[in-house]
Image (cartoon, rainbow, N blue to C red; front, side, top):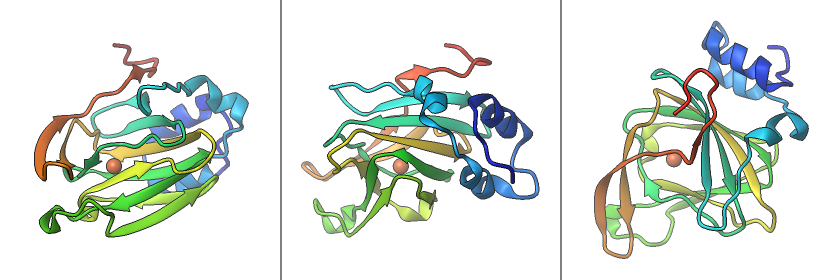
Length: 176
Ligand SMILES: [Fe+2]
């Protein structure tokens, strides 16, 4: 697949769907320079930011922005699969085992700038955390769109249904 160098090209490729090569090849082809993806980035001192730039029921595209130390909740996907690419900085992927009342990860992997990853529901409970010294921008594609997940609080041991929200919706076709 041809390299994807602009947001317009990315939007076009996402509209075209997985095609013969699939989303794994699509995410591999993403080679956006910072001046191209930077317009999607939003950082906050409060928490990591989820910025939706492609919004359909069958595919959701998110930019996620993490200041050093920021993490997601520990959650599962409800049958969705996903692909990630780190555009700048690094991100740690950690697995947890609520059955063992685990507050410490059972598995950990670091993705650095340019690396891609595949996510599916078999992962079970997991979270992302930026343990690096710099802010991190990570692109995520989810099929289907993630509307709900289960989250796990290791402090209380409780598992809860959580509606998944975004901080910004920048899809030009689906504002609001
Ligand atoms: Fe996740």
